[in-house]
Length: 93
Image (cartoon, rainbow, N blue to C red; front, side):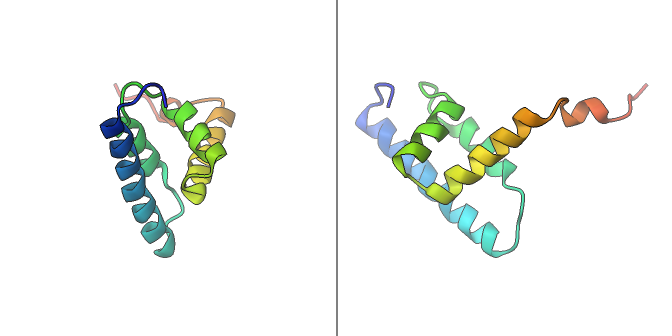
């Protein structure tokens, strides 16, 4: 993956394992919105990697299928929205 060192590769999968555990626990607790996990993933991702491309590659390769499917759904939903949610908030004077 984009010339990652062995250590960077291990760090990526450690991050993913932790996020997957959190996802499974939150899903079991009935949580429906996992955007915060996607934001965490993007923020912690090695700068050599692009978040969306990495998610699609991981999904294609079959890594963490439920988590990656959730992330893809969030990305696709965001693409369908014509405006950012913040554009709909009333203006503050």
